[in-house]
Image (cartoon, rainbow, N blue to C red):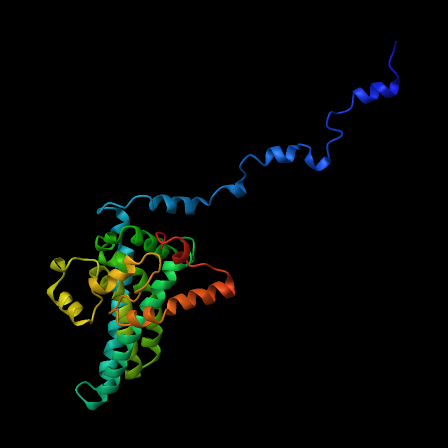
Length: 284
């Protein structure tokens, strides 16, 4: 006997008709299992991460100075020397007027150590290799904390060209527009210390027997950052400290008063940005 039309219609219905629509499989859900362009990591970031997997060899091209590096260091040194010359000539060499430029220079030396610490703290804890202007320095800093000895293998211009470029662009307008010996007394010493602070940093990682005797003497006098002063920066990986790398004179003040920890908390509360020292001590 033939089945009623209504019954036949029932047998032809989809077996999922009693399942809520939100639980039914869909083509969209199936497709979402496959990777899309949005889920793929940034190619440049992937390449940068691969470079941090193993340390470069001592003859790696990334540790060598290029012609561009040397030109920027030459420009930076020339500009700083021009500023220093203006402080000497304007102050009247050998006269009592040299006292003010000399005191300004001493202030520049003291504040350069503090400035180096602030900058060092910033690139160690924030940004990545894609950050404009300083991305390569951030990547280098992360590699430095994985393999601190690498900085002793970098050639001088390779290690210092970025800071030399910054000092050239900052000091050159003052050299052209200002003749005040006190201003140049401060600027020339401050810029010199910042330009060379990465070299001071490298010397703090070198064994004393390999250092020029005068550098070792200055380290012993506390005029330049020493290995003993800098060791805390790499020893306390979970709470980075001792960021200043010119003389290190500010490190005890900043560390004992937890100045950088306070700055990190303020930035986190205001912008929700976590420093790398809170979560990934090896990615500095």
